[in-house]
Length: 258
Image 1: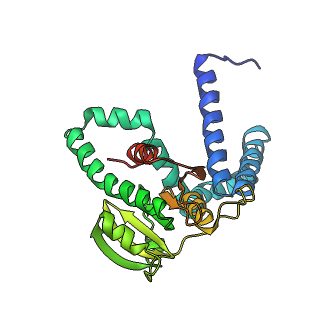
Image 2: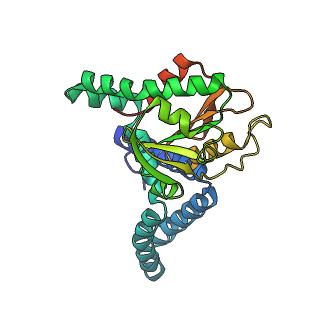
Image 3: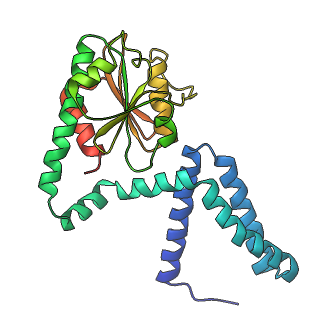
């Protein structure tokens, strides 16, 4: 039997393909690719059994499994889904559209500059003196589990405070500092270490921890190398290496939401 195939069907297929592609990317980043493949195989079998073979009993059982399974997947991958939705909301075009309708954007930009500049200046001074530092900036998804591994501070972002925390004789200098909602909330925090084999050998444990943090959450992590003094940023599982003061300020301005 022939059926009509129009523009609406083409759009439908393209949208489904895009949805599957982004789901694939999401699972790949969260190292759950085998789970995605298993779900895809189950869905194909479910469609084949219920729609093509029209096996009512098996089809009804699989229908129930699908309805319950969706809720289970949402619970299981809630962090990844939150990160994915945050990535969409933080996209440059979406953010520009949002800022167009929001009021007081200029004031917010000024406030953000006031919070970013002490961080940039502290990183430059630590870079000049080859003082190692690891600073995590929380964005959309909360990282309470990481904050709980360190010492609570709750102080405004201050250049001297940042430099004092990472001073070599400070008891908190080995861990990571966490900044959330324009406040330094904790220091001496323990970060997950990335086991990515593609990380260059000359990058040390701080860089592996920064990359691991960017893979596990949507946070942004600034690293100052103790050996070379170079400044790097880990974001969305990728590094930006050897940043100047202007480049670091630009990255933080673009990536940290207003």
